Length: 173
Ligand SMILES: C[S@@+](CC[C@H](N)C(=O)[O-])C[C@H]1O[C@@H](n2cnc3c(N)ncnc32)[C@H](O)[C@@H]1O
Image (cartoon, rainbow, N blue to C red; front, side):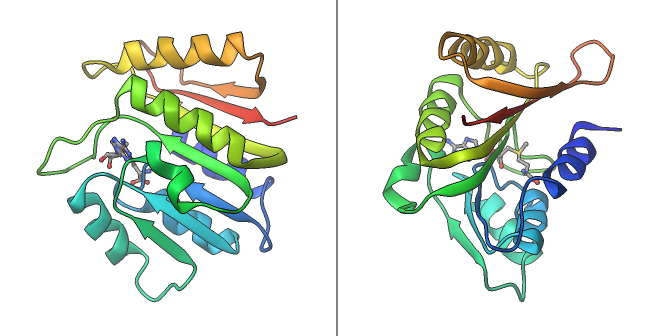
């Protein structure tokens, strides 16, 4: 099972139709579409115009997605309500013409702000990719943050291969 399949299976048990959620890396819109089918409202962020266009197409006909063409580090400028779940699928836009990739320091700001916006008992899900340039540094930076702040990790998931993506499911206590 790849990480995205694992995450989607897991999310089904975490959220319901009354919940507000956020996809902090919309990309091609797969996670945004999934969250929009399960929750009341989804805020979806991406800095890439190509990603926003791709996500817009994926969610055609759905009226519960707020697309934000801006960095996830600005989440507090757009989200003024509590979130049940926030998801980060880090790395670069798959199949993209433009190379748009997450960066550790900015991801750290976005993770801190998203965690702040979570309701108590809410969830933060982060999938890290190690094999592209900067991916490993981003992982170490965030891992350090998670440990120092003693965030509660419910699950980690990774396929048993070199440099496989790593997913953390975190609960806000
Ligand atoms: C692995 S892709 C996400 C895949 C997506 N969740 C899906 O289901 O198709 C990572 C995305 O993060 C976006 N990204 C990079 N830096 C960002 C930032 N500062 N704020 C928001 N999105 C960013 C990239 O443009 C890219 O589309």
